[in-house]
Image (cartoon, rainbow, N blue to C red; front, side):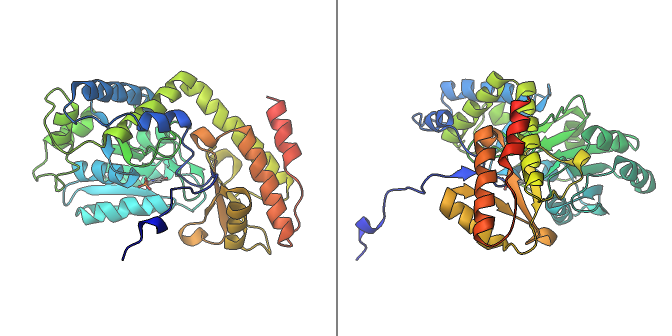
Length: 393
Ligand SMILES: *Cc1c(COP(=O)(O)O)cnc(C)c1O
């Protein structure tokens, strides 16, 4: 017999989410999510959908009408952008400087693209000059790259990538999953033709929505397709008929996730993009000052670092999993381990959206020192150095 009493109330305990995502979700956003569910054709929902799109255009820095959250996580956005724009045989140049660049290659290949993979060292930015040379050499129709490589903490230059691609008239696709809401994306200013992101990183909404944006040139490429878009669920032309004026049923919108996402975007707008970027930058500077004062070092060279994702080299003698377990058990603090070639070599510390503040950086530095010391790894204190950065601001 099944005993229902064995299934307890949900209670993970207190958590500070300082990994590569999801990031912490504010009470305000959680309350918005518990707004009563309404139908997917309710006129009130249409109003909320329109507002969500308007807020999204602001955060993306675009006037693109085709800007909306796809139902699904960041990977759904990645697939949505690629599946709508790539036809079999299309020459696609993918810049790879980490784990998520490899994912772009994987999906492009599945779609039958004539893939040209351009590799950069993990932990470094994509070099626009190298891209420019490759674009001239192979003449791709599409160039794709990751703005903020969450696997390494490297930040690439979207304007440079875009200019390099445009020299051959190629479309530029950008992964903005980790960058959106934490650093400037500037879709229109940087000439990005299509991009995708996720709800759970610097926007600090629960995971489950993936905002995408398609510009004029991208829509023209879709219109000129000779083959049908191979995914029904991610077909932007049909999806656009639900989010747009026609309001035609495509799938049941995850209504409560949209409520939560809109609330999180509203909070971004209230703070203001510039203030939000400045908060991420300052908090990052304090974190790095603390980490370096402890005697640890960062993976990425200073000029190429992301503020919201910090890859710290694991010091000699420290055991990766044991340290992360102790941080979670002793402090409710979640940080990430390394992906791919960086597994066991770095910790990935996220300061995304809601969790990006002085309190959490101070907690992290003190907790890490405490755990490392207890496990016999000698490190100094980082709190004073971080304090100096915050006080100097
Ligand atoms: C998190 C992430 C993704 C994937 O998003 P999911 O929400 O995990 O599906 C893609 N690209 C980058 C750069 C990411 O950080």
